Length: 178
Image 1: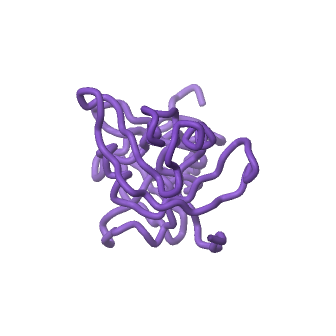
Image 2: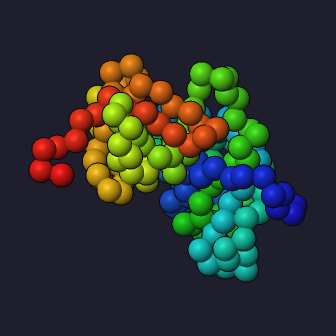
Image 3: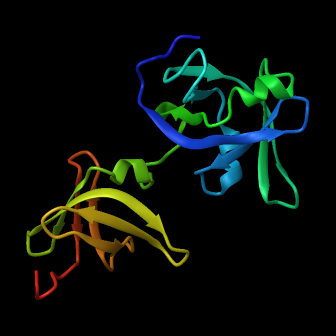
């Protein structure tokens, strides 16, 4: 299949092989992690091999939780043995943005990365470069003039998110020494 020009979202990585019948181990970035099995086709990009660095579509035939809930494994179309599965080790897994089922209230981490962050006084703190999952709540990693880690708690620290204009307004005071 040829790549289409739609934006790709990284949802996981193939981290190893499982068994002798072509199954691969999956590291998932989705929440819950088994949601990665909800999407097909997957777009994979491998660090080596004949298609090094190119996205190509693969159909997900089956996916399940293995080993007491600790590992995710998947069976891909045309991957019928351990040797073929090994060729996919280290490959990134992505989906097309159109595969997401989101409502107007939902946003994804990928939507927040690159947003400019301003506080309630109009001071530009920087740009979101990533998010950190802490267990209690997610945290924005802001880099720039005033780098900081800001808890992603709506209506307490996050006042508004404007994805269309790539702007997040926060209730966040600058440190005195900055």
